[in-house]
Amino acid sequence: MRKIALVGALAIAFASRAAAQAADGKALYDELCKKCHGALGTPPKTMQAKFEKIKKFDAEYMAKRTDDSVVKVLTKGKNEDMKSFKEKMKPDEMAAVAKYVHELAAKAKP
Image 1 (cartoon, rainbow, N blue to C red):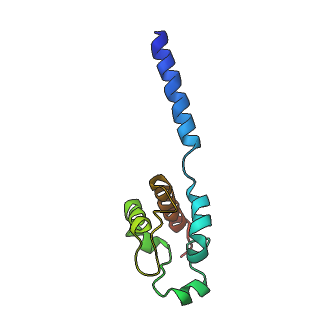
Image 2: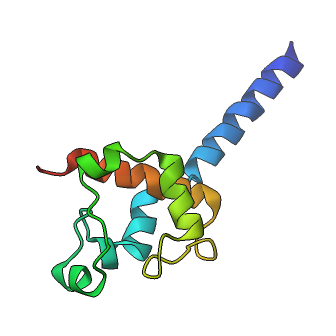
């Protein structure tokens, strides 16, 4: 009985620690994505002028994209303007950013 309780306590402690260390999608987005894609997912006019293909992360656009498809773009890049972030983010960090971008789209005003 003591072994089961100990194993359970260790599992809870490990899960709590892992949750505390989870990647912060907003912080990563603010650091690596906001300059081009804007704080709320709408690229600033200067970036729209510089990168004609840059996308706005609104509900319509993001409804057609899964977290996995966003991670794929972050991993491989999209075109000459959107380079890969595989050297700047780990896979779990990319997943956190993908989740955050979907949250932004859900909050965006039409």
